[in-house]
Image 1 (cartoon, rainbow, N blue to C red):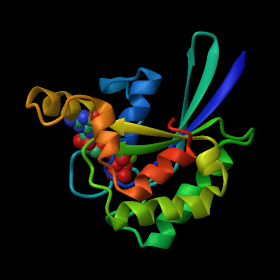
Image 2: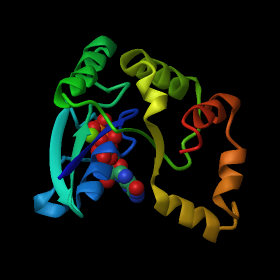
Image 3: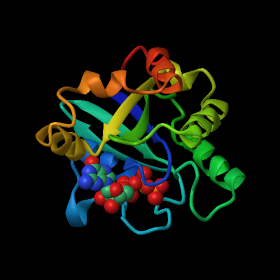
Length: 170
Ligand SMILES: Nc1nc2c(ncn2[C@@H]2O[C@H](COP(=O)(O)OP(=O)(O)OP(=O)(O)O)[C@@H](O)[C@H]2O)c(=O)[nH]1
Ligand SMILES: [Mg+2]
């Protein structure tokens, strides 16, 4: 059976853990990763959960958020870097998790810089930008704030457009 390893990274609260549950199809009491709307960061350690989907064994690795609310920056980055130990056969995709509607400030830029330091070239080589909070996209469309997704992408500042370019618009 083939195996695929996916790592989810991004700023705290951007929806990594909830996304991981969606990918694995695990909800409610059976959820794989805890998630929460509370003010302090939820995921404190990198952890792996797996599922078989269409004859492929998927390994999904959740990581603590960059800019964790409680830990000192270096501690969190060290915890995120431990995800590498959870994928001895390497990684097939690095999901850069960003909520739809997030303004791409210097802080987002710094976060991606930290991740680049941790993952090196793999960040963009295997990177896929995943927009969570798709429900807000539907709302924005209903309110006629935007017509289609490309309009949102076109409105992004240069740094983020550059990131999208580097992951080849994935
Ligand atoms: N409406 C909506 N809420 C979402 C979505 N994704 C995540 N959330 C909510 O956002 C909050 C944070 O989600 P988490 O999955 O815990 O985020 P995280 O990136 O894992 O955060 P930390 O582990 O704290 O760093 C939770 O209350 C989720 O239910 C989404 O697509 N739509
Ligand atoms: Mg989490």
